Picture: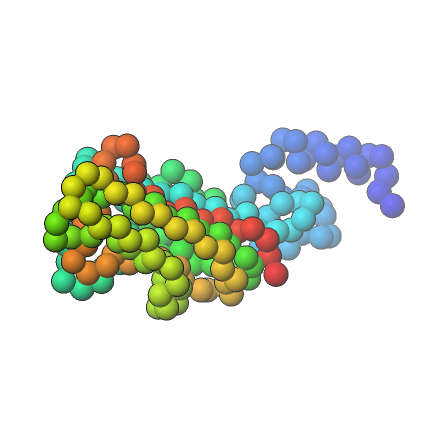
Length: 183
């Protein structure tokens, strides 16, 4: 049982170091994972993983059409808790085994020859897609999925061949995901 002084010192440490989310240095329960700021909560030991990003870092424009399916790289990152999303590759890599939820919203201008379409891919396998095609006006296909991921599983979006996707300073084309719970 902790003495009053130890409990008080633990609370003071957590209060002054709330951004690191680590137990006091003298704690025997400290693990290697707890030394990474923001990834482990002192009360649960569960990683916190969430990201949200839009396609273009700045400006506006169309992506595509391409003659092959092309990975999409979402460069305007507004949240990347746990750093599981890589804005240079567009890949989300699962840091822990668990159930994850992903959503993607794709924006495009209607075109007679080109749809607006993307697919969510897990470890190279097509999982779900979002697709819309009309000759005029704007379209905004979207989709979402909950997946059981193992450590190291890779999730990303791939643009359909011969499709066009638009984004601008309003960040209408987005990709987001978060850990629901570990398994």
